[in-house]
Image 1 (cartoon, helix red, strand yellow):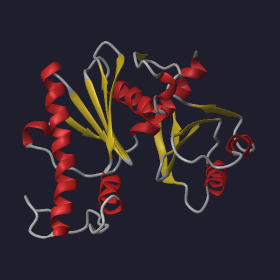
Image 2 (image 1 turned 30 degrees about the vertical axis):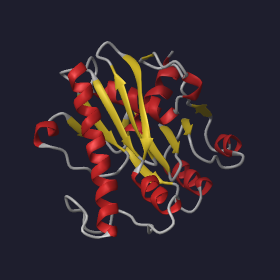
Image 3 (image 1 turned 60 degrees about the horizontal axis):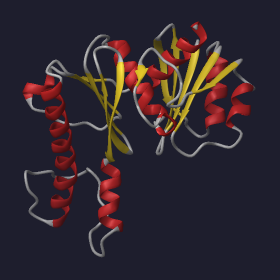
Image 4 (image 1 turned 90 degrees about the horizontal axis):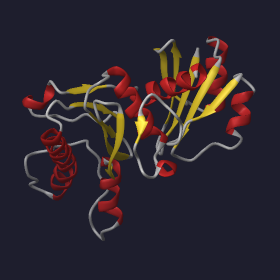
Length: 242
């Protein structure tokens, strides 16, 4: 069995896989070390794939190797079943690369757009001939709310809880609508732009933020909360089977 650890900017996610099937998906809990220890007591973990785009815990590799025989770091240079056409592979986030690999594994020989709505929102393209083409990065919802508060003198710190009308009738609803519907329109804009280029495009949505899309797009969109973790497992198995 394999363990994947996805260390992001706001959360750390751990998944256990057995021959590509996810048996457990959990957050780190009180501490990463305690969670890893508990997992390894429950499951016979043979290998671990780690992706880190956030703040890395001290002595992470040493801690993991106390419990797991094989530990592999995943980054934008890690070989996988896709051809990587990204010019700056050393700066490519492991989460973006893993999500693209996972999407192509689930829907091979298909033009794909992978949207990961986390701390940042990433839009990544995979062509039907198995090439990761790159994509775009924009601020996530929480970052946009925080920026409006921190970069102005009087706007309050808000979140998505509350009314989100078509247009705001007070400052709070104006901010919520501007942020949430702004992100939705951004996503639809990128999707429509890429569909013009790739008419058969399918879209994977991950990252946990719920969005409503027009009916005409719904049959193209697949929600997959564990997409990055699945990609880490695919990359780990690809390496070990080479």
